Every structure is written in structure tokens, then in C-alpha cells.
Image 1 (cartoon, one colour):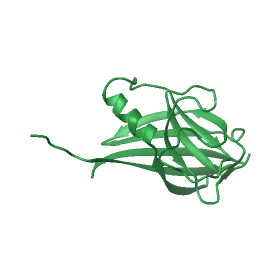
Image 2 (cartoon, rainbow, N blue to C red):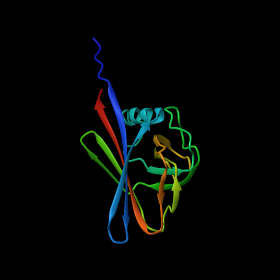
Image 3 (cartoon, rainbow, N blue to C red):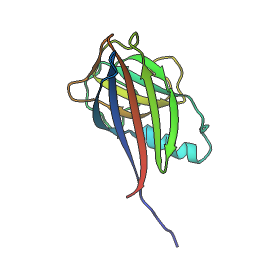
Length: 154
């Protein structure tokens, strides 16, 4: 007898800007967990990927809609290694911190990579976000990007 328990993976992003006076503003978006992300999760469960693999955030200027077959960002221009990794229940939480001097500009696409390096487009793309209107950061603020991947029974 075969038992099947469908599992869904959901991605959620929170952008938190903090100005020089400590005031915060935030934006939340939901992203697409791409096929390579689903394969990577299965590979990690099978022990084919180290659980403590390098995690990078890729940011770029591409505008094509996110698609389940994406394997990289359309036009990646900057990369940042994860600052903190935690887990709460069935949710992985990645946080990336940018100081006032980092990542100044406008970004229209975002993605998280497992097994990446500092080289653009390296690693396995887990998820991709193309937020409406893009996301901007200027030199007067810090930015925290929090990415949550939640596994749930379907």
C-alpha cells in the first residue's frame, strides 16, 4: 500500500528599511518557488546537498515574470551572502542585511540561491521574486531582506 502526503512550499519576502533615526517601513511579497528549488529541497532531504550550504541573495534588473522553470535571475547584478539562517517549525528563515553603503539602487528581481558563491548566477535558484514596481534602496537607509520558505501539507 502506498501513502502519499502532498507537500507545498510557500515563499514570502519582507523588506524592512531603517532610516538614520531608526524609523522602519516594510513591504511584504510572495514569490514563486521554482522547480530547481523543489529539486534542491528533495536533494537536501536525500543528503545530496549539505544542510549548511552557502546561501546567497541575488538581485537584478530583469523584468520577465517569474516562471517555475527559471534556473537563474534574468539579469543578476549584485549578490549578498546570508547573514542569519534560522528555522521555526516548518519554516526556514533567511535574513540578509545591507548597510547604508551597500546595494544602493533599484532592483526589479530577487532570488535565493543554495550552493552558490560570490560569482553571479552560481548555485541553485530556490525562488524568484519580481515585485510590482521593484524595490529601491538609497544611501540614507539600511535594508533587511527576510525570506521565508514554509513547507506545509497540501
